[in-house]
Image 1 (cartoon, rainbow, N blue to C red):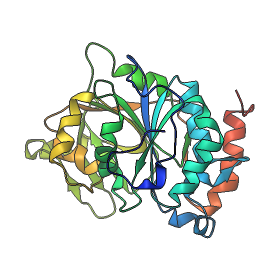
Image 2: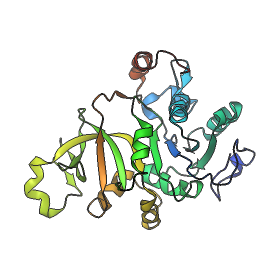
Image 3: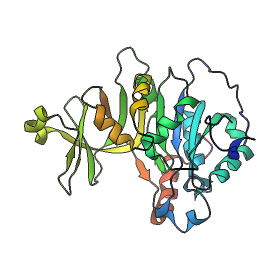
Image 4: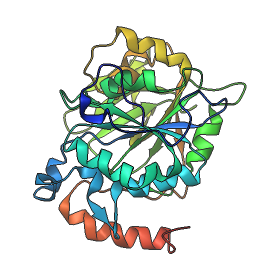
Length: 279
């Protein structure tokens, strides 16, 4: 299992299931698994959020299997809270036959944008990266999302969005190009070009799912970002220069398993979507 250059010796003994050489056309993804999982206490007092069980398997297993079933082969997982438990779990399962690489954030949590920046050396620099939160369960068409960034005319990023109710929304124009962000409770707006201010009321407010795909054209932009930042800040900084597009799925079913009271609900959610766990 490959690790970041310069990380601690914590992962020095890990081994990769696949060749370390780049594989042309390999589909690659990153799973955000470094969070403290404070909303899942007391479970996360003794384990990382990624290993909290749902329907008999850890959250990480559910995301890994979905990625594997959609043809992803190289997967980078960032770790911080009880990091060694995640490494041991992967080793005990032979990395599930995947090229899994660990991005070590044990010294400092880097947030979502900083996590991507720190992990970039572990990826093929010429292929898109699908990003997936470890606590998101869904029927999202991950392969379709990824394949859209392999077409001749493609956006610079594709964000899976929906009309679910929340406090914070991304703002999109009629073509579903991202134009900004808003907090509907406070009225705060970020990223919006002043020339679009008169059209603000016509912009669509859509909720971000935590699932998105980055084009390799964006990778150089991370060099000038700080070590620690949120990916939404990145999108807001560059949304007037680059095409960050939203994608809606009519039949999208998505659940954020971030709180204790959602765990039982999540089991039922999985049973309705995937009646056979190993299919």
